[in-house]
Amino acid sequence: MPRQLFGTDGIRGVAGEYPLDPKTVYAFGRALGEWASAAAGKRGHESARIVIGMDTRESGPQFAALIAAGLRRSGTEPVFAGLTTTPGIAYVTRVEDFIAGLMISASHNPYRDNGLKVFDHSGFKLEDKIEDGIEQRIFTFAAEDCEPVSVAVEPDATLGSRYLDFLASTFHRSLKGRKIVLDCANGSASYLGPELFARLGAEVVAMSCAPDGRNINLNCGALHTEALRAAVVAHGADYGAAFDGDADRCMAVARTGKVIDGDHALLIAGRKLHAEGKLAGKHGSPAIVATVMSNLGLQRALEASGIELIRTRVGDKYVLEELLRSDLPLGGEQSGHVIFREYATTGDGLLTALRIIEQAEETGQCLDELTADFHIYPQRLVNVRFQVKRPLEELPSVQAEIRATEAEFGAAGRVLVRFSGTEPLARVMVEGPSEERVLVRAQEIAAAIVAALSE
Image (cartoon, rainbow, N blue to C red; front, top):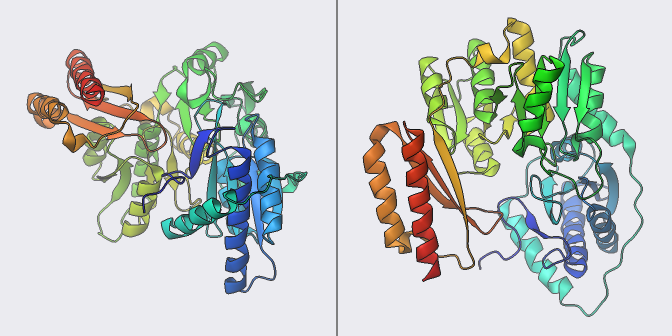
C-alpha cells in the first residue's frame, strides 16, 4: 500500500492542516508511543522514553504538547529538550537512554510548514517498515471519536548542554583572535551557535538570532546568504556560517565573501580525510558520496586528488544508505547537508562549520585557498509547481527536451529532472559549459513540464 503520511523526511505539511491537524498529531503521538513501549520490552529496557525537540516555529509548542499527551497515553514517557537542532536530537537519542527521538521541524521551509521526524536509538531515522506500521496505527487512532488532548512539557536544558559539550570536544584548536559571523536563520541554532563558537574563543557576530515564531528562514540562513556575505566582508571576519531552520545544513562564507557550499565542504573535508588515509571503504579506493545535484566541478576536483565521487539520489537518506553500504566516512549534498560518520549519524550544520574551519586553521589557508581549484560548472535549478503529479516517463514531450539537452552538452553537462519528496514541485537541474545555454535549456524543460501537466 502506498504511503500517505511519511515521506523521505518524516511527515511534512502545513501546520494545522491534515496531516498536521491536532487530531492526527495526537494520534501520531499515540502510535509512536505504542511502538516505543513494545520496542522497549523487546530490548530489555525498564521503561520507554522518547526525547522531543523542536525548532522555533510558532506551531512547535502545540505539537510537542499534543505528542507528549499521546505518548503518555500509550505508556511512553516524553522528555522535552525544547529548542534544539535536528542533529542535536539525533545525538542525545543515541547517547542517552531513549528508545527514540522526535524532532518537530520543517527544516528550511517557511514557518507555516512543520514536520515530524523520528530517530531510533541508533541515531538513524526509523526503518521504512516501522514507519509503515506507525502510519497504520495513526489512521486507527485518528478514526476514534475522541478529542485530542495535550499536556504541559518543561524543557530539560541539560540535553542541549550535552550536545554542545560534544561538539566542542571534536575541535582541538582555539579560535582566539578569530572573528566569525553566524546567520542562524532565526531557527534552532539561534542560541546554540553563538554559544558554541564563543566557547571556542572566537569573536562572534550574530545575525538572525531573534526568533519570533514566524521569521524562521525568512530571507536569512542557509538559503539566503546575501546578508551574511556582506557582513563577513564589512566586519573583516575570518569566517561566516549560515544554518537553516533546524541547523542540519551549513553554508559557509570565506573572508572575501565567497560562498562555501556543501560541495566545497565535501572537497575540503574529503582531501583532509584522504591525506589521513581514511577514505578507503569496502571498495578499497578513496571515495566520498554526494547526490546527483553536486556540481560537475566537484567531481573533477576530486578526481584530480585521486578521489572517486559516488552519486546517489537526492536526499540525505540515500547518501547515508550509500555511506553505510560502502563503509565510507563522508558524504553530503550541495545544499550544505554533510554527514561526518566519525561523529554523527545525520547532517549537522554546526559540526560541518567546525570541520572546515578546523582544516583552514590547521593548514593556515583561508577557505578561498582551500577551494581555489574548484571550478564551478554553470548550473541552473528551476522549480515547477504542479497540482496533479504524473510519472516523467509518461510525458514524451518532456523526455524529448531532456534528450535534446543531453545531446547538446554531451560529457560537458548533465540534466536532472525529479519530483521533490517534500513539496509539490518538479525540480529541473541543468548543468553545462555555458551559463546562457544552461538557463535556456532549463527553462525549455520547465515549460514542457508545465504544458504536459496541464493537459
